[in-house]
Length: 184
Image (cartoon, rainbow, N blue to C red; front, side):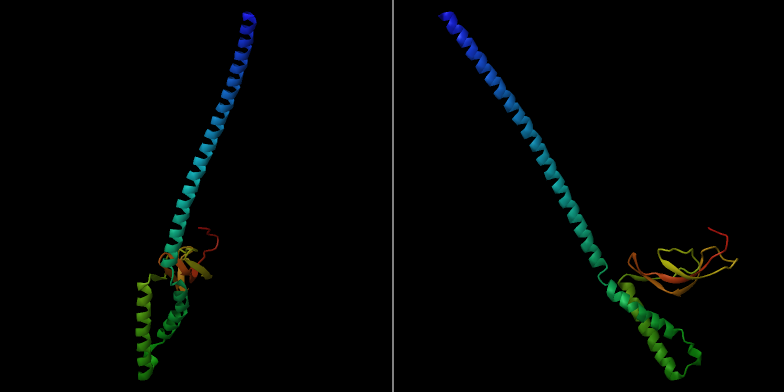
């Protein structure tokens, strides 16, 4: 009977070893699965953190731009007034009566003060007469073909353009030299 008992015990030990082995494998698989889930969760957390940092940077830039160009609409509305002052100032002062000359002098002072105020807020005129045409700053309304000027040279500024800090708020309207057959 002892041999029988030993066989039974060996079989039971084999079953126990098999059971333990199976449970051990299951536990190893669970550990691998949990490690994978942990890695995925860490990656998600890093991604979310990076997204948050990028979002904050974008928002800071937007707020900065909004503050930097907050006066754009007001300035854009004032530019036609400046244009009208310039037209009035172009009048020939020699052919005017004393009274009209005084009015013109007042216009010149108001114009000068308005231009100074706009300059303080970062507004600058785009006047590139004699320079090469730049479509980022100007729009060509007319062209001429003069041999004594370079191709695409700005010959005349028809309407001043303006920049607010580094952004064009109104491109200059210009007349450019366009020499036929010369594509730069």
